[in-house]
Length: 215
Length: 215
Image (cartoon, rainbow over all chains, first blue to last red; front, side, top):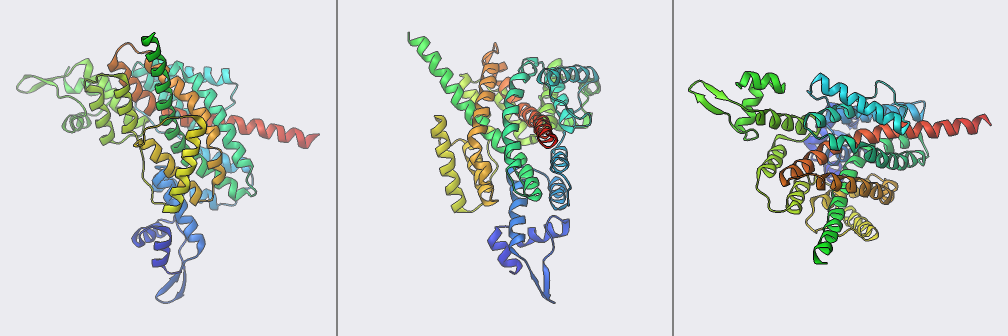
């Protein structure tokens, strides 16, 4: 199909498609005449994935590029490919003090030991978690840090579902895509479910309080 | 204290502090001489909160401003204040097709009914969830949509902890801050815990597979 049709089918403007090709997110089309470039269904699929990661996942162009490179790479093992995906979506860095960072590192180490999680030292998620705990300590929210065990139990449930979904896929390529899509769109899904569940739970609690008052 | 000391104490550059004041994120200092403005400990606290939301929570300047306005507003009820916070952190919009949106809306309605969650129609989280499901359908990942019940169970656990933390706070102002910090920094914490739990769970599963092969 021509670029105009690719744009109509995918809902992505022509200028944006050209930008993605220039940035290496989308493979170039095949030139079939000197003034005509042909695009395939694969381009439609890839464009949808790009838009989902950017629009729904809130991921940057740069990270999307890295994730797609992983998807296109010939990886030898699921574990390698999964590890790479999870690591690419690692950490935000913060600017908290050294003493908060040390306290936070101790909080996180104790949590990992209680949960018996064996985590590679260089894990960006480990650094992100330490940064979050340090920021919470600095803000005086040690109550949130103390609740981390409860959040970790929920995270284990989530991860078990995640890994089950990845393992259910027939090919390595599809496993990698599920790891990317499930983790990034999944973060947005989980944040939305969390807000909805908060509304549900706070109604329930208020209903209880209401009954207490009425009695 | 002077702005230079505020900068040293908070770790935020002077130019950034001035920018936050101009943007209305940080209250101006008190002018004590024609060339000297005084800042208090409250400024340090507020700066830490701003940096945590932006650096750790990945929130925009605009949303940070809205959240701080909520924190400063005299709200009459916890529920109102909580609702406002959760709603402000609502949805990303996507560009998926109408038929995927309808299917996704049906998926989400069925989920809410199975979980007996009563949610306000205008909830931005509801729209985000529908958008995510529509994107997943379009990408052919109905397996992830089908796993939403399992994610919802985990989200309920998380929300119960969330609401418990908020209810444990002594004042409305502190409740609002916990709702903001706990939800935004909490999303980052949960994403990090999810990555770590994924590493833990995939090791466990690989260890099992290893044993199967060895037998």
